[in-house]
Amino acid sequence: MDRPTEDVVVVRIYLQQDQNRREVLLRRLRDWGKVRGATFFHGVQGFGAQHEGSSEPLVIEFFESAEKVDEALELLDDVVDPGHVVYWPAKLR
Image (cartoon, rainbow, N blue to C red; front, top):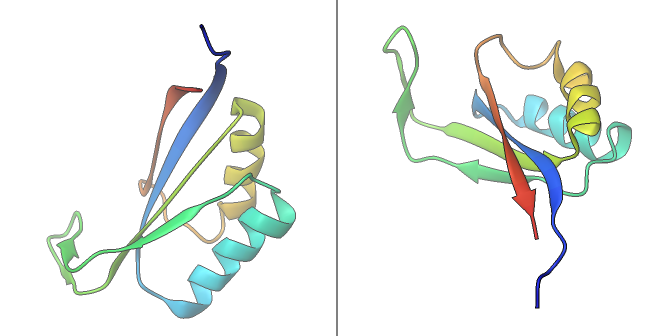
């Protein structure tokens, strides 16, 4: 039996660990953007474009409709540095 699918966009945001910024992002995605859910991944170690090390990288991932993603990213624009967001189309089943 074929299950219905839904077109969504998966968003991944790369940050350095910062408790205040994490709480702001969580609040904006959950309370303001009303996205269906988000996952915060804590990395062990990483580095950025300037090859400066970060011992506490953080990745935030969520999926939503394209329209909702556009709205959510606008809400995060002043909190997330340019060049730290990637997204791609996907199917939800």
